[in-house]
Length: 125
Image 1 (tube, rainbow, N blue to C red):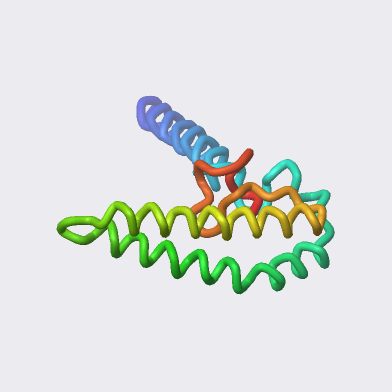
Image 2: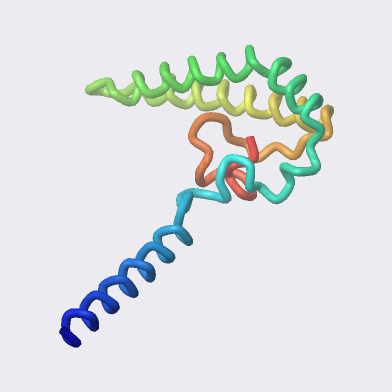
């Protein structure tokens, strides 16, 4: 009986310990999470929405160019000049987006879409 109670207590303790560890890791992943960027709290939501609306066409164009770039890379014999040209077009669009972010007073982390690995915290925009 004493052995059974001890086993139950050890099991309850381990489950509680593992539950605490799992809860502590909730949401872990790349960056700080979608709204955890240190600079995000200081951004006016109306300015952010205006910036988002104002740059929608640029971001769509960038997405289109990235698709075209992936198609160029997927060719059996890639045309490196065309790839270079697409990358330059993407860089120009990114510069335009960054200029608009500066005009709106928004810190831009230089990455829409796949965020990790770009910018300061990688998740701001």
